[in-house]
Length: 145
Image 1: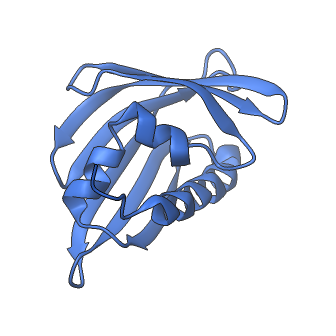
Image 2 (image 1 turned 45 degrees about the vertical axis):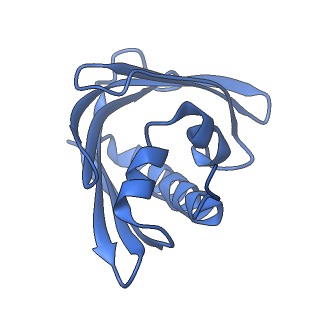
């Protein structure tokens, strides 16, 4: 039996800007891990079939999140697998779908749906994704280079 974590958040930037945040290692370093956890290394190969890896320090506990990109439809959809090194070794990958819909004048309604989770992991992931969405909101909009 598996379950789903679901988070929605309105962000102060258009879908294109939000989409690009999800695939830029430097941007991800600013908001991806729910604080106090911080990424120590981020690698991503943002193409269908490409892999990503987040090395994370969560108050002294080291963990790694890995997965592969399944679908990338700029600027409205990202779908990727998700596996955390703290899960049991036989735990299957879960699936994260991020949809980005225009909202208001220049905003985005971001929906994060994390499926195929063990039921005991849903609350933790829903809380984590809510914190991550809030952290992303504080980094947007980014100033033009």
